[in-house]
Length: 268
Image 1 (cartoon, rainbow, N blue to C red):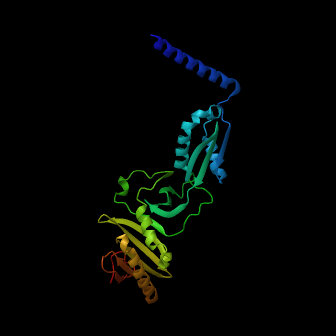
Image 2 (cartoon, one colour; image 1 turned 60 degrees about the vertical axis):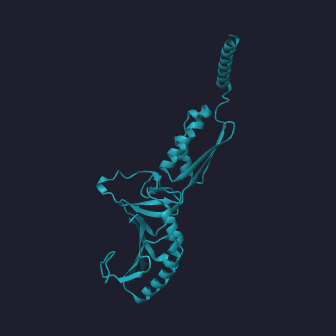
Image 3 (cartoon, rainbow, N blue to C red; image 1 turned 90 degrees about the vertical axis):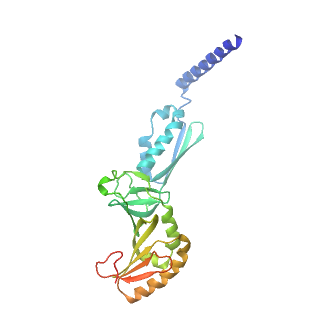
């Protein structure tokens, strides 16, 4: 029976210890927040952080160990930032708030969005997500098509949220063609799915001439295709007129002249 009495003694001793610590904190506030630093170059973000900082954590900092995750989630959901918090000492913390860099300009469901390399997107018209100093690319505009009917889709998301499509296909595409001399003439790129694979429709504008390029090939063949496109586009720019360049075939590139008002697949 002695071990049972000893077990109750340990519980009582532990309770007395906690009570003593609590009373000690009441006298000298030794569990109050001792220091906090916000690492950001944007004063607006710092003000937003302190607006949502829980005041009770100033009096009792251990509770912030859990609530810091909720704050980071809220800030990343409402502003294009990455938030990381770490404890630097007893009762001292550091929160770094790094702005996301707009990578692409995306048109989706009739609205224009910024997309970061981390795969997060936000509406350029959203006042809450608009941060000064962000270098937003002007072109090309990436148009994302969806199979669902507009009326059957869920409400358009607000704030900052993960990109609803894979960025890997776009990354591979840019690795293959983004640094090409002709890519600077691309005004917009439409991304669609056909036969289980991505198809890219590029609209290149030079002066009054427009060239439309369709690309749906295995990435392993993009280097060879890029070389062929450089020669084809240079010749077509000299010849004049609007053309459709269909590079979706495995063994050839088909060039057709577009009549006024003609769209994809229309050639003569």
